[in-house]
Every structure is written in structure tokens, then in C-alpha cells.
Amino acid sequence: MHIAVCDDNTDELAHIASLLEHYRREYNSSITYETFYSATELLETMKTRRFDLLFLDILMPGVNGIDAAREIRCTDEDIPIFFLTASREFAIESYRVNAEDYMMKPAKEEEIFSALDKQLARLSENSAYLILKITDGIVKLPLSQIVFVEVLNHTVYFTLKNGAVREVTGSLSDYESTLLTDPAFYKPHRSYVVNLEQVVELSKKGFFTTVGKTVPIARDTFSKTKAAYMKYMMGGNGGCGI
Image 1 (spheres, rainbow, N blue to C red):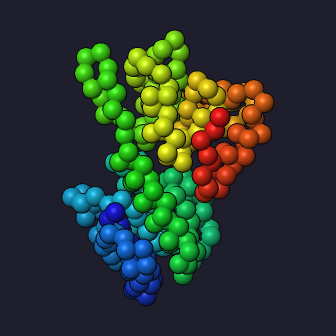
Image 2: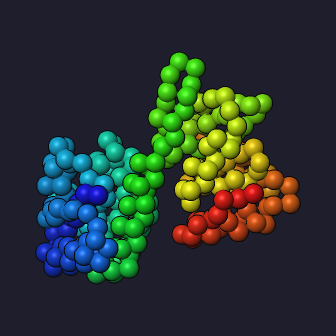
């Protein structure tokens, strides 16, 4: 994982760098990072170099952090941005550019470590995939692209983040053992497995997903499902489901 840290304050920049070094030693991690003293310098570098995570100061001379984030979002909607600031007045603006979090200076070790843990877990999830044998070939399907999986009449349907649906002949059991090893996936019904990362609402009607479809919950299991979903949202493993 390659990280960019941008702050015009040299002391804060050194502080973040020391925390990253501590994390690398503590967890024997292969993370790498680069430091930048201005948003302009960072933006120019990002034209030719990709980062997996940004720690970005808000109050900087010239191009500030919010403006830099707006520009970054024009070409990269997914890169996690963690804002660093001494003032809370920009909290609303930070969420308008889909910031991952908003950290008060000086940055705390537990906050930085949590950000690194979360992104490394995401990158690991993105590397996991299923191999689907379709009519005219084979598809490598990343787990991170799946919203939910449904089986109906010996056909398994994979609904994806972009709204597309892949279908293969078979049973849910052909795939659920792989899916359920990932803590983001949960089986709320014998015919469904859902990606909790792609859920926007939970009610007794089921999981309402980012693609506008609802995944049903098996009768009499709502309390268990709700507890598992809350546990997952709080950072725990929600479990496999029914």
C-alpha cells in the first residue's frame, strides 16, 4: 500500500511519518509513503503516480485540502482521503468530497493505525475473487464488485455494483464457502448472500442495497441479522448467517 501525506507544517508531516514508520515496524507491514509540503505538489505527482490512501491537511497556502480533494475526485472517486486539521469548521465540506474521516491535529496513533488497518483490509478484499464458468467462457469476478448473490431454479445470479448481473448454472453452495470467509458477506436467507458493504438500510423487509434492490431476511431471524449487521458496522465480523 502506497500512501501520500500532504501538510505544509513540517512538524506535523514528521509526526505522521513517524507513526507510519511505527506501524510498519509493529506489524511488519510493507506500506510505503511519500510526503508533500503543498497540495499543488501532490496533485502534480498524482498525474503520474498512484496512491492507495491520502492524509491531507485542509488549511494550506495556495490550493487548500478541500480544493485538492475536489480535483482528485474528478478522476478518482474511490481513493480514501483522511483530512487533518486543527479546526472543526470544515467538517461539512470534508464529507461533501466523500472524505473517509476527519482527524484533529495532532493526529493520534490509534486513528492513523485504524485508517491503515481498514485500507489494507479493503485491498485484501479487492484481491479475492471467484471464477465463474459462463456459457461462452470464464469470468474472474472480484468479491468487492458483488452486491448480492441469489439462487433461483438452479441458476446463481451475481448482482454487481455497476448494476450488471452475471448468471451461472449451479447452486449457492458452490460459492458461499468462499464468499463467507470474507467478513463483509452475510447469508440472511437460504437463497441469498449479501455484501454488507453494499447495504444502505436494514429493515424487516430486508437489506436495501446500493443498486436499489432488497435482499430478504429469513423469517424469525431479523434480530440475529440486525445484531450481525451492527457488529459488522462497528468493525467486528458479523458472522456467516443462517
